Length: 125
Image (cartoon, rainbow, N blue to C red):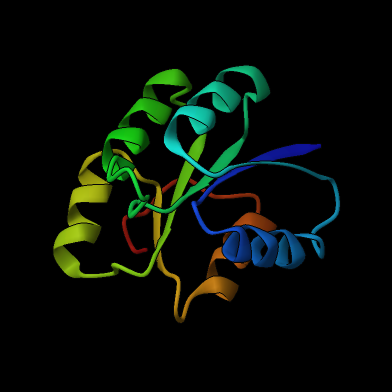
């Protein structure tokens, strides 16, 4: 059983992600709407992968990404954001993100990464 933590302040996005991930067997999914709850869940839930939006309302997305990697360096951190600009992507990858996807066009690619067992980061995405 793989554990996935979703940290996104949009209930609509969290629901869409849960629907997309329902097609992958053997997943246990937890969700948080803000950074503090996300950190707390990461400590308790010990997810294999964390899907995070770096544009959280409190503006702490990249700091949260770094904290998630400190909590459990083995967890794969997947950034899924509407702010898919090269400079944001580079900052996220430098901060420890394993994958970076555009919310408006790359949901399926993100699901494919989870379905494939999340290979080691190649830097390609």
